[in-house]
Length: 120
Image 1 (cartoon, rainbow, N blue to C red):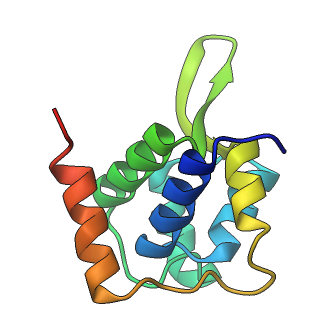
Image 2 (image 1 turned 180 degrees about the vertical axis):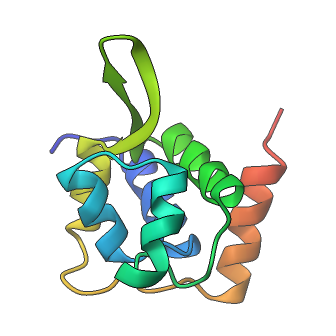
């Protein structure tokens, strides 16, 4: 895959900082899922390291869309609330044969700053 190294590094860092497990990314690669569906399935299927509300899950989905890991599903009416994995997301997830290693506290703080305090 011919991707920008900066985009890859940003996606790797983001995936390590979010609470989603590898199984979540495999699930959205197999078929689309909405934040509401995710919250119903997350605990039972082990899709997340922490419990999330639909609103919080949607916030994470929006960030992953902005990073380029997820995209909105399209149907006959246009965009839906469901998301799917992008080729970049698929490529990054495949880097880890097992579980995605969680980031440390400093890396998570740095990612939080990038996400909530973007450069102007």
